[in-house]
Amino acid sequence: MTLTRRRLLAGMAAGAALPALPRTLGAAAAAMPVLRTEELSARLLPPEYPETRLWSYAGRSPGPELRLAQGARLRRRLENRLPAATTVHWHGIRIDNAMDGVPGLTQDAVPPGASFDYDFALPDAGTYWYHAHEKSYEQVARGLYGALIVEEPDPPEVDREEVLVLDDWRIDPATGQLAANFEMPHDRSHAGRIGNYITTNGAQTLELAARRHERLRLRLVNASNARIFRLGLMGLEGWLMALDGMPLETPAPLTATLTLAPAQRADLIVDVIAEPGGEAFLVRQERDGGYAQAVFAVAGQAGAARRDAPGALPPNPVTALKAPGTARRLTLHMEGGAMGGMQGAMLNGRAADMREIAGANQFWAFNGMVGMPDAPLAELDRGEEVRVAIRNDTAFPHAMHVHGHHFREIGADGARGPWRDTLLVDRGETREIGFVADNPGDWLFHCHMLAHAASGMMTWFRVTG
Ligand SMILES: [Cu+2]
Image (cartoon, protein in one colour):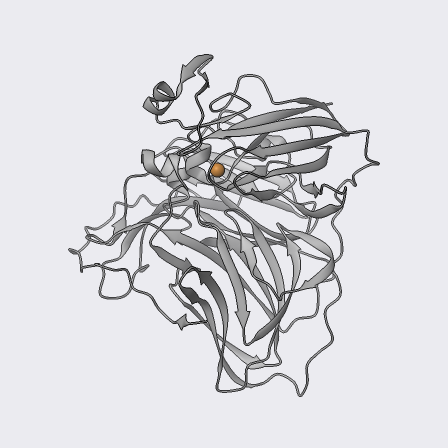
């Protein structure tokens, strides 16, 4: 495996100096802690390039790490100082529906200069994240996201932890600014907005210090619009502890590559096995080899010997699936996109052919409907169990995200996979998920390749009672 510490953008030239950014200062102090959206000029690229204009929470991208105890309430007043309306979605939180941050479904988008109070309980420990949900294909691409960490009352023994937020930016090499083509038909109809500049916590190669035999908890978040990360370890030995916030019943030794689709998270526990003076890596696998996503400079020893393998994290209080056979069965048929062969679908309430659909900059359909339907995919009674067979009849993988609930994949043999909130469904696959609809409200169910969600791959379900 080759390993390149840094890879610079091909063809980048130094751009002109940046104009000063307009900035509106905050209003009087409010009772609620404030989470302010604002423009930001960030040192994202190497020093020979100008700063890059982003959108941010609290003047940082990733936004401030929000860290609370399991069972606590998260309270934040979103103050919108951006030139566009926005909302916050608290991804993976089994949340009160009114706080889910989906414009047009659970709240109105918050206009520039206005505010919205988010106040909700955190039922589950784990690694979550928050991000804009209005025009998310643009706002997340501009940097509007951050990590949300919910701590276990009795956390595992580690020397320290690192939250690693991965992103994939599309930079215009001529200016060092974000490429402004957020609604490009080619992205929408293909793999989404794939970038050309990959970062961890805003750094092209995040550099951290470590000691031999040190035990770290790594919390990985894929905040990118569309990139599927394939990750591995060098000089580290690790276990996969949790996916999408939810602990695995048994920690899984990380021997193979870990796939992290957009919006997915993974908790790892890793032991540093590289020698003092050496380096250890979180490696990003690409077709042409491995790249350093994060590098640990190893100095000194944390202990004389390796430790025992970690035990499982305590489970979260997710409602267990019942016996098979009682569940309501649904199908989600995914069609469209380039090379997908879709002939037509319902668009804005009437049948349309593919040319007309593409003319509206739409490309995908769920169950023959382009975009958010008026009627829900299903109305479920609270406490009802549901199984959804997700059939990917397109030429691209899709990261399907259920709001308000975690689900388990049900294998062909009935085996139940780990609890997740986002499932990567590859081209040609049919994958079944199951969950108990125990959270009342209207919940979005969509592809987290954000350009796909904006061009047809969005539906919703209602839980009543
Ligand atoms: Cu998709």
